[in-house]
Image (cartoon, rainbow, N blue to C red):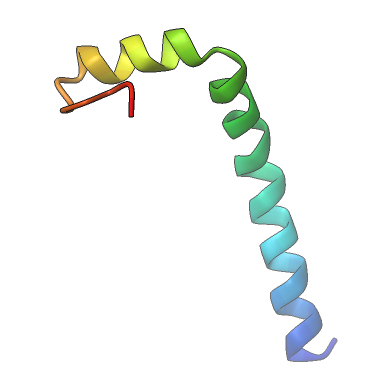
Length: 46
């Protein structure tokens, strides 16, 4: 398998891991904001 194809496959697999949790965070934006505020992050609503 060429190196470029292997890199593409690895990027797609990483995207399959992170994209669903990102959509979940956007769908529940108030819960995500509350979580960030609880962590003490400045300006969690930004």
